[in-house]
Image (cartoon, rainbow, N blue to C red; front, side, top):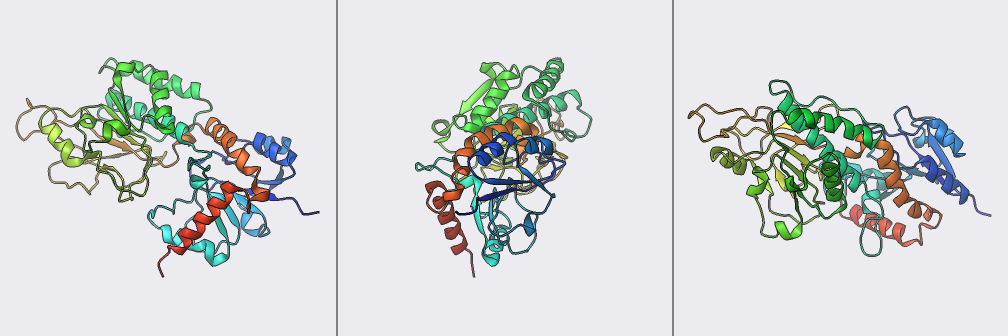
Length: 398
């Protein structure tokens, strides 16, 4: 009789990452199907250690996965620390190295050097090429939430620093309560924000629209765009004329025309058309040559949720500083621009704002594939993932 397949859930090391690739409910289901589930203790994970104990998982020390037997499958969410250590295990995670992101070669080389394998969660697909599980809806929902919080913060605190550090919320109703309160206060300063979502028909866009409507934004103030509306190619003046722009387009390998540029926004400012105050780039791939939001070039974080965009006349479209001025009214005195902030949110793990609900939703979709791990060399979803890994390794230069 063969030994049971062992899944080792590692503790996440990324700052502010409270989600889990495995919930206690999913762990219990795996155990009932004959798997052994080892769970690293974690002070940051939204699910307490005792919840996994109650599911009959085996608790192991935090950070113990490097010493686990090579046959154990290492399950996590976000990327590992930036090191050069060869990796001997099979890892199941989001590695962010298949689309030639910054540092992708160093990340990917660690696996063949150690004899390990990567099953990238972003590329687990069904026979039609659709992802079997994604945080898209949660990412859109949380991105829209932060966009509204940034917008109201600007209105209510015009002379203060940018949106301060954010912490996670226990539930979606708790988050909505905060947003509705800030929106109610901001209505004394400005009407309801005009919001434009690109990628509105996808999971991410649907999540963003759900949040906006739940927060009380009228449907007339929500513009929903997808492929039909962007087919003419950007840049799009409609972005400059919205208060909030939320980009929910999944970035593939093919380049697309920019949705928005600094020069476009400068021109809109000169003509008194720029309303845009907040951009949330849920797609969040600033170093990709295919990034269509070409007004910033760095990630943000929950400790510093926004980066300001410099629209002063001396800057170019590939620079990014923390000063934001542009003339936004034709009636302004020549040479004396009026300050109007433009903030970009570019957090690559937005669903951590609602870690419990995001993890539960994601794991419900992922579980059917996890239950096939004991047959991963014949189960299509894992065969496809391993084949793609081999192709990406073969593409490494040198």
